[in-house]
Image 1 (cartoon, rainbow, N blue to C red):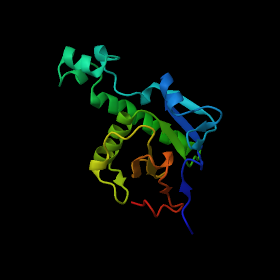
Image 2 (cartoon, one colour):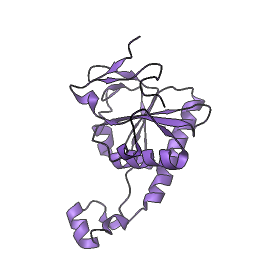
Image 3 (spheres, rainbow, N blue to C red):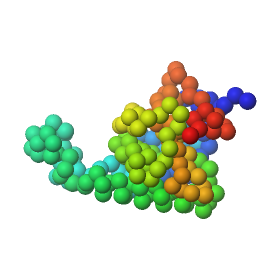
Image 4 (cartoon, rainbow, N blue to C red):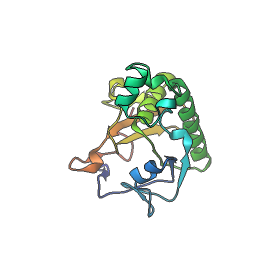
Length: 189
């Protein structure tokens, strides 16, 4: 049997959607009229816990201005630490997974910033023990492209047993087509 193909003309049914709560995320994800980009969406929930790292007094400044005011190495250290951001995001991740299991959901979509996706993905592999799918390496888990798609499979029996099967794919935006096996073989861990 051929695996289903996901591209700009196909949809994935999802059971739940959680988005970062700032206005731009809802519009970036095109979360309106029951659709988020290439995904059919029943409803979505907003949370501040998927926001990017809070930058304190450097928040909202142009990067070049923040670097001048606070220094090339210090401008990122004016607000929330990376560790605190990861605690906040991972706590939300666990909440979403537990809620999904309790509702017997299969597919859950999260929409947030690339920095959050990259940092969470690295944390899931290095600290939680998630595996990487065929062809993925830790070096691949960098800042993903805008509007990219990452897929993480998680065991309903053990939420710490997961596999990042795809990271930062933009094939749904154009000419390339992404194959995802229904039985998990294409990107299995």
